[in-house]
Length: 315
Image 1 (cartoon, rainbow, N blue to C red):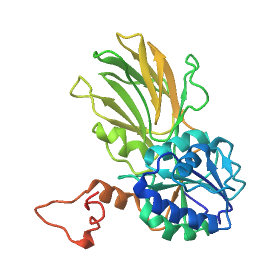
Image 2 (image 1 turned 120 degrees about the vertical axis):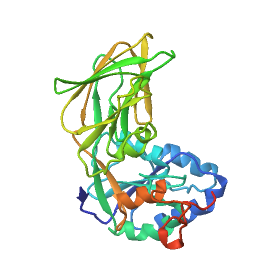
Image 3 (image 1 turned 45 degrees about the vertical axis):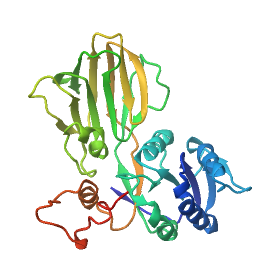
Image 4 (image 1 turned 90 degrees about the vertical axis):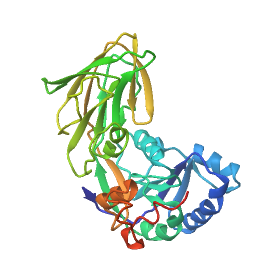
């Protein structure tokens, strides 16, 4: 799962929102990056956000994620939350470019480097002090719908009802074998990476990203015995969705599309994984424990050695 780290020679920075409170931290991080030997460029969206806060420079180079030429030693750095990382994963369209998420929000399973630590950590990262995790992605095959070319998802693909209150019916087959028919508000097809996202909020299990597995998780199922099902990543899912409305919603991470009903499409593993930058010593289980406060019981109390002090502090 881990890839070989390299000294970074080119960087593309991407983000969208900068609050007034974050301006000093952004200024410190940009100072470190501009002082490095890496060639620096900015997406138009992020450069606009920087300019509005007086953080841009006259010689800033503009670039876009889908055109970023990383050579053999480039990296994209995102500023925001997990949504910004997901957006970047979609724009990369399977290109083998590692992405580091700097978290300016609250939770962050993908954007795991907190902004307050970024200035300290970045010099080591740029000199090769990081590891690359290869995270499985899913892609949609739906030729009847005009969805464009960006049909990959790092977290999940969902189909759900759009404008009416009634349930929809979703039938799922894997490599021709019938799995289940769900009467529900919709269905989530989640990767292991996405198991801590939408699927988790719908009662799905947490799956280690090393697992070659996906989760079929119905959204508000009517039948009490319909529960999330974990199946192998490999194989092709054929999904049939229909309801009383003439349209359904199909989502791929942060992107939503209106499609005609009934809808028939396929979901399969993407050919190339997403390359997520992690810092040495970062462990998925520890991250989940800290972010979700697993094992924390007020009856037992906790100390600073428990590792909860950061996550329980006022925000």
